[in-house]
Amino acid sequence: MSYKLSVVIPVYNVESYIGECLDSIVNQTLGIENIEVIIVNDKTPDNSMEIVKEYASDYPSFKIINHEENKGLGGSRNTGLKHVTSDYVTFVDSDDFISSDTFKDSLSKIEDSGADLLIYNMQTYTGNECIVDESVHNQNFAENIIVDDINDYPKLFFSTSACNKIYHKSLFPLIEFSKGLYEDNVTISNVLLNAKRIYLSKNSSYFYRKNPESITERVSKKNVFDLCDVISGLFDLKDYNVNLLAINFINDVLFWIYYYDWPIADEISFVNKLQSSINTVSEEDIERFIQLVPNKKVYKEDILSLLKYDSDTFLAKFKYFNSLNKVKSTASLYIDIGDGFNEINKVSIDYCPLERNKLTFDLSNFDNIQSLRFDPLEGDFIKARINNIDVIDTNSDNPDDEYQIFTNLDPNYILDCKFTDELIIDFDLIFLNKTDIANILNNKNNIINEFNQKNKKGRFNFLK
Image (tube, rainbow, N blue to C red):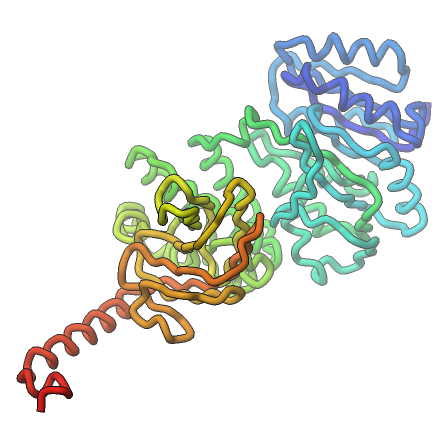
């Protein structure tokens, strides 16, 4: 039988979700008789396949391929691709699902445009609701766009999920997934480089289930080593824009090294692995990355220095002797409801400090608010400015200047604003470097010394 589209679905440990996934396939407006459903049983130990067999008994377009040993998500997709008989293929993970008109609408767009690759929107499903989760790896489209030159859309190289895409058979030879985690990044980057025409569709949605038990939600040594292999593979593609994705992953590995309390031997092995996986990264490349992804905390100096030091020295310099602000900091809003500012009545938000920040605080649980104190972070010397709210007082060194300088480790502002259920604070923040701090403290010492050197009559105007 001839099919209009093939869909490959690897199955492993998803008995709670596989029914919802398959329902979204068999209920497609394209008609299940036009869809070749290739189920790859990756030696699942649960009852997922019993559910699959019920669907297969009702729908002749279902094929079941059984692995004799577990090959992982990438290996299962590779197996499924070998059994595709139609001109187009897509991949759906067995705990996810898609909107009902996805296949019919997408194939119509492909036929009209002559595209060999179509990408549609992706939303996160929490189990209760669907969220448009805009992130570096998920740019959703507000309009339909045809891309003839991907260099005009470099951010597409961050959209490397295999699943929200439909591929023409001319691209099949490029589709071979790795066995490790993050199996789709290098493969899809190569597909994006070689697709002749790409259609970006606003009219369909892939619903990615946010599963906290997923292996990709827990960071282990395998995560670090596998992502380093991906970084190496991306550099092998030798493309100016793909290097931006590599920088993103280098930054992620550094975050894991800084954030988690690993044994020192593991940290050394991570840095060694990362150093062996990268090519030289230029400052220009990092600046391009920052321009494309302005809201991500980037370890610019660390990345530029990776190949300059051995692993021990790098860790000493960039993790242990310069550990502050490598990871998320906490901003707190203290609420005075009549008994002053205290640790009980406050709202805290974890965030990665950038030069420009915007945080939203929920005050709906507080009545009789009399005053608010905002602490942008704790534990470092900073220069800061609040852009959208007037300030009554601050414990900075220079409260009347445009930027306030804090040489105390508990900077705070007393705010002058209306007390509503929600407060948005837009603020700039710059960390003072060692030279800045030295100059400020030196100026303070000079003032103190000058004050002490004068006699009393010279110090006070009223004593003459």
